[in-house]
Image 1 (cartoon, each protein chain N blue to C red):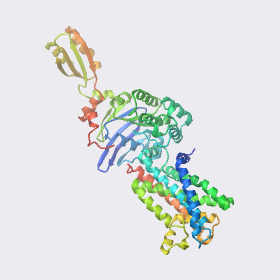
Image 2: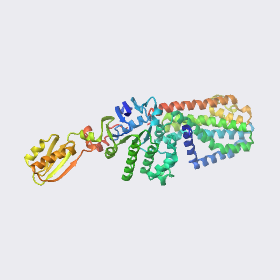
Image 3: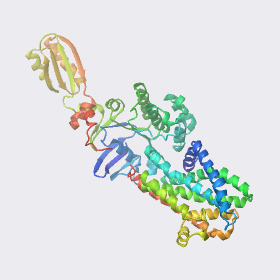
Length: 321
Length: 252
């Protein structure tokens, strides 16, 4: 069941179209990753869903409430961890989180804050002013707001930016935990591995437009010949072997990298490999090694946009979200 | 705790966190009244008790300048993106504006409380009704000024423009009021303009509740009505502007 549904959601800043007629559904209990480079419109979508900014056109329904007509009711369902931590410099993590917990109606706010600060290794820094915290600590305080609040719909905007690898795993696990406890998560990120690891479905945004939305597996499979199997042989590959392999339905392309090294492009490599092995075994061919590689979300992004995600981050014409 | 009170609580904390600024401002007010006020009152012979008149005016003016601080804080918060955080919370815009205005008024009140208390003891006013009336006049005015400050800050959406307008407003609102001199001694056009100035009525209401000579003051009933209208107008406008301007996203 869709808990969030955007209907032609559009945001313009002057002549700059940050979000262009977005139609997207978020299913209850899923983690939806919104993936795209800077300027793709991710943050604008999140700010509209949180009723912080108003759409220029279209609307969205959040938990049955229209974001234009029922902004307060919408905010009661939503918790957001911003991309840039929103911590007022004269406050400490303890004050920031305790106040946030009280405003969001968390039961036993002090207990909840203490537990979270300890979980996120922020307990020793609880009395420091926000301006004294490192970038990573500020980010953890920001994410802690949503983790304490446990909203029905949690929005997290690049939750692990500036956080070290150990901290990333910790936060990823906590986001999954939040989902497991019943929250729906909308995750905006430009980190491919983050989207891939966390998301049940990924929506790829580019220049304000939704290009595609599906599970990571289906997205990868949507690239014709996206999976690659590298096979190294004990002897040069014979024409007969090539011909037999070409006859297997589902193989998109084949190439000889060296006389003893063949590359096969296909989909669902894990399902196709046994068939390939059967053919090679029947031919009595000696195999030295087999390597299987599935496409990354970067390949998916390249397939749909014609650009590599890393390069498109720097594209000056991309609208600012 | 109601969300309105949580908004008030948060803003009150920020007053306590600026202890050095508090001490400096107290020092300034005490010096202004204690040195400048005493010296000037010796020069002015046409008006009896000018020292008390001046001291009461400075207190209300100081409350004005502390209450106006809410607007500057909104700019600080906008710079740090904190406004977006506040807007994302399950708090109505009305609660946010009214809460911040109430807190702005309370902050100026708390800030001035030791000085006012000392002054009341100094002039020997112990009648609880009069003390309450004086405090209500001060608080009502400070509450309205906070609303005005929020309205201007959110309406202008530019720290520079806000600075310029507040500077100009500060210059005119003080000089075109009876804060430092009674209307009876003002040149004709200035006296007329001062009749449209809420600071005139707030200071005169404060003086009236502390038994100052009525011949120098505006009618207390009119003063009370003006102060109430002032606080209601700017808090109501603040709510409207907060809803329209901030949710419109043009702040960004």
